[in-house]
Image 1 (cartoon, protein in one colour):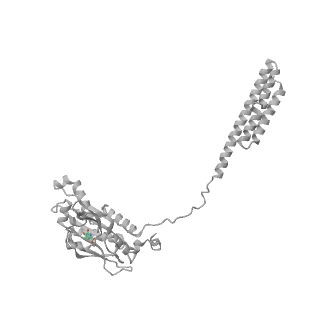
Image 2 (cartoon, rainbow, N blue to C red):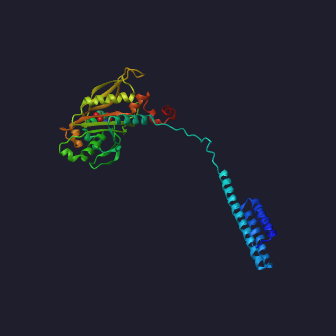
Image 3 (cartoon, helix red, strand yellow):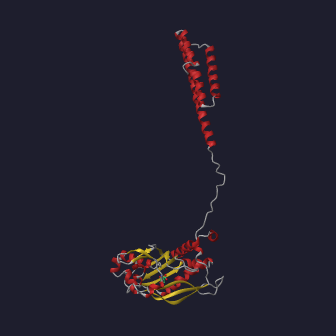
Length: 357
Ligand code: DAH
């Protein structure tokens, strides 16, 4: 069983030669050619196997075993090189497709909120902190919600206070739909939904509380420096067993001080008329410093909710009372940001808007 050393040497040289040849192959096609040279039908290993024929049985065994071992070594070398090439190829591909993530992107300005949105968000945040819910509702309204339920029946002179956009569509009462002229519609919608939800409790005579604001878009046939056909209001409604005018004054003054960040702000209620409140008032404020100091500025309508309006909501005026207010969001934004012409808000001039970023 002494394997002739010459054969082993030859075989070692063969394995080395195969390794060297495989190492030279830099593409997988070339590597397959190299494989054929050693392991193929006419390859060197196959030749050696054929050459065994001339040897005795014993020699065949030892030589055959040695050749097989060499063959296995060559196959292992081939597999190793294949693996190397695959990894190299992947590496090259990754390099070629690499993204330079350190290159700064082409910047688009981050933009900013519109001043009316800024004011709107501020209003929601401040009233939210005072425990007010925030409600939202339709801009295309029925006559009932926009007028009649608010104490403003057909032909009532108060209707002429508002120039209304009508929609060429009739509601179930044969009245044309309109674009809501104020957010006061939401007083009725919200309170009526509350009354339906709590119908059983209301029948038992229980009194709960409604505290809500409803910011949104409103529409009137109007267009000048302080009026736009589309504008924004925020409605407020606070009803309960004994919600009073005093609560309105305290609450609204707190709101204004927070909104304008002015602690020395003064406020007054001026008697007024609205068909859905009694008594009714206009709320004026006065700054003690800054460019608007010393002038009374109107910011809101307000009043104690009229008993008939409470009935229209499905509430008993013997048990519920409270107040409502309706303020112009655009007006509040103009005062806060010192904008003199309302139309600037809606023209989309980037030079104007960029100042609020
Ligand atoms: N809806 C009124 C308007 O647009 C504003 C208003 C006044 C709302 C008094 C109210 C209120 O809630 O109590 O002119």
